[in-house]
Structures are given as C-alpha cells and as structure tokens.
Length: 73
Image (cartoon, rainbow, N blue to C red):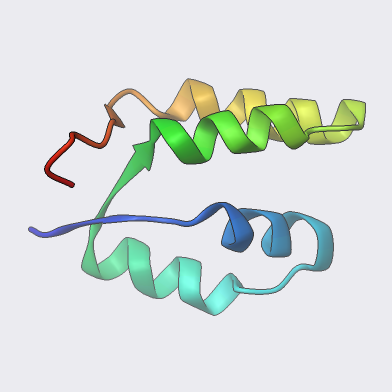
C-alpha cells in the first residue's frame, strides 16, 4: 500500500477550524500515513496553547515511524 504525509497546514486547519475532515478519511483509506519529522517539528514549535500542545503530543505518540527527508528528497 502506498504511503502519504499530511502537511502541517492540513493539521492546523483541521484542529483550528475543523476543515479537511473528509480529506483525512480519504487519505487514511487509500494510504498508510507516515509522519514527517519536519511536520512534527513545525507543529511542536507552533503549539501556543495547552490544547495545541496536547494535540501535538498525541500526534507524536501515534507517530511510531517518522520520515526524515534525505538530501536526495
């Protein structure tokens, strides 16, 4: 099964405005979701409230495999 990485802006839109719900469902059905170390870092740096920190921490716990870009990427 192919894999996908969800961008930082998609997580933020989903958490802050409830957007992208359908996209999350569709992506999870069609792909294995891998978590980018870059996206996780951006989310952690940008978490400004206790709730945002909890959401990011939960995502980190789910991210058993973190993809890191190589120079070739």
